[in-house]
Picture 1 (cartoon, rainbow, N blue to C red):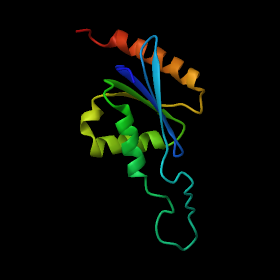
Picture 2: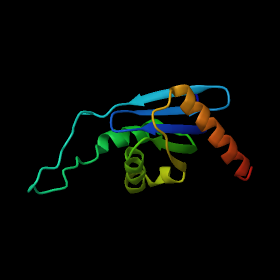
Picture 3: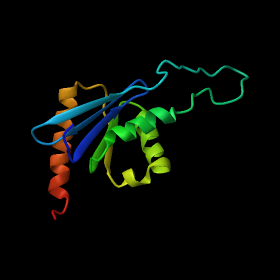
Picture 4: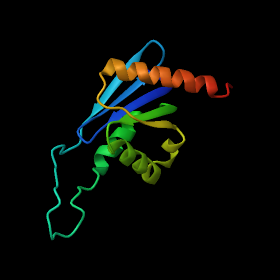
Length: 131
């Protein structure tokens, strides 16, 4: 895999796609949870929230897939992107400085997500002081 400074993560509870890219090239890593089909439903008169705990191994594997990228955009359709952000804050604080944004994005094609990320970072880069 080539070294790219930018990454976009698209995540839900079934898979995560991590794209490392620059203006001309891209590398893709796909991460799957160990058990993506867990569904817990709340029953009347039961104890607990009825929600499954976040898969910490899955979230950690996604953070590993981010690798050495310097600027990361987190995206996804639901709450998994927020769970990933909270996981990073609690377990990988050095990655927190790399997160430049969190956006709700439904289920785009890989090409559409990459186009969105390139446009996002183009605007972000124009606003970032150059060294």
